[in-house]
Amino acid sequence: EDVLFIGNSYTFYWNLPQSVSAMAESQNISMRARQSTASSANLAEHWKAERQLQTMERLRSQNFSRVVLQDHSLGALEAPKRMMHYGQLFASEIQKRGAKVYLFMTWARAFNP
Image 1 (cartoon, rainbow, N blue to C red):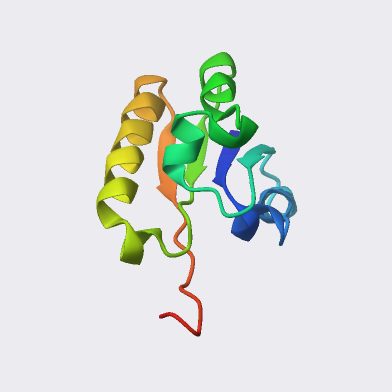
Image 2: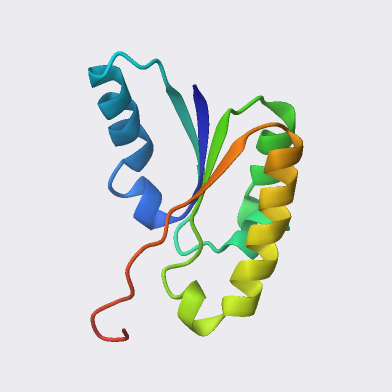
C-alpha cells in the first residue's frame, strides 16, 4: 500500500503516517506512508498550492492506493462550506486515480468547542 496523508500538524506532530505504517507492519501489511503537511493548513491551501505546499503535484505524479484527508481542526465548525468544497474536489481527483479516500477528522479545541 502507498498512502498519502494530506493535513497539518495534527498529522505530522504525532507522526501519524509513521504510526499507521508501524501498525500495518505489525500485521504483516506492507505500507509506505508519505505526507504533505503544513502547520494549521486546510484543504483549500493544499489544493491551491499555497504556503509552498506541493500536494497536488505529489498526488498527480505518484501512484497512491489510499489518501487520507485532514482539514483544519476547526474547519467543520468555522468553514464547513470550504471544507466540503475542497474535500469534494480532492475526493474526485483521488478517485479518478483509482485510490480510496479517507477522512481524518480531528477534535475541536477545548477553549473553542
